[in-house]
Length: 273
Image 1 (cartoon, rainbow, N blue to C red):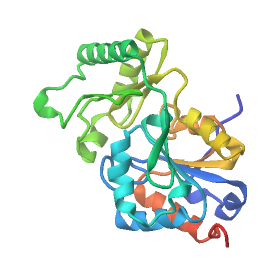
Image 2 (tube, one colour; image 1 turned 180 degrees about the horizontal axis):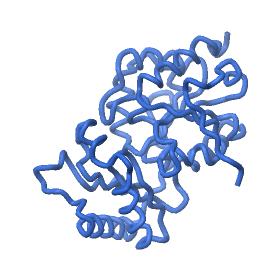
Image 3 (spheres, rainbow, N blue to C red; image 1 turned 90 degrees about the horizontal axis):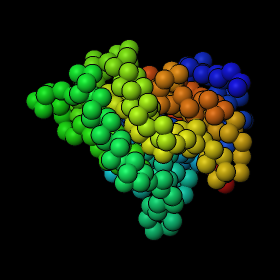
């Protein structure tokens, strides 16, 4: 396997980057927006402008309704919809604009048996490892069946960002849980997800799969796809995009991403001009 290169957002040669990419992908939480919250008005303006300059994909572990609330509701008409591609639940589903609405083009849903096995294993190991917290310490659902993905969130789906950031800063809790569940489910992919979550999906489905599908969609090489994300560490959920060969750009928070987008808007021409 070739060496994986990660570029910090403020070290990127953007003039060179604009000559080498055909499409750009973004993570959602902590990249385009604070976790589970809508993107800001400034981000929506810049992001919408970028859709007029290059095709964009958003690839996130979140389910499609979060894309509607965090992205689409904020963009309104400020978007070239034909250039926006939505890949929720880590690329296990794909939505694009068909001229009248957002259409699901594919969905790799888990079988009922695999979904039940994932829920049982996540629940059992979380309790064994002391990660199944009292109800009063949890915001929203701990376990979520997203059809194509089962997600365990230690603090609940709607936990505030500060609580999430403080819970497992070195990711040892999540990684330990993911390893235990993976041993139970060799037929599935188990990975450390967001800051407090562990995801279970069909075998081989992660952000590397999303990069391969995007390369097919645009008849290009993965090396000509850039991907921007905050979890580019080897156990992070954005790392598979880099490992697949995409030009990986690491950010730490949405304000970094906004700078990336503004630099691209200043260099890329509007499509068709």
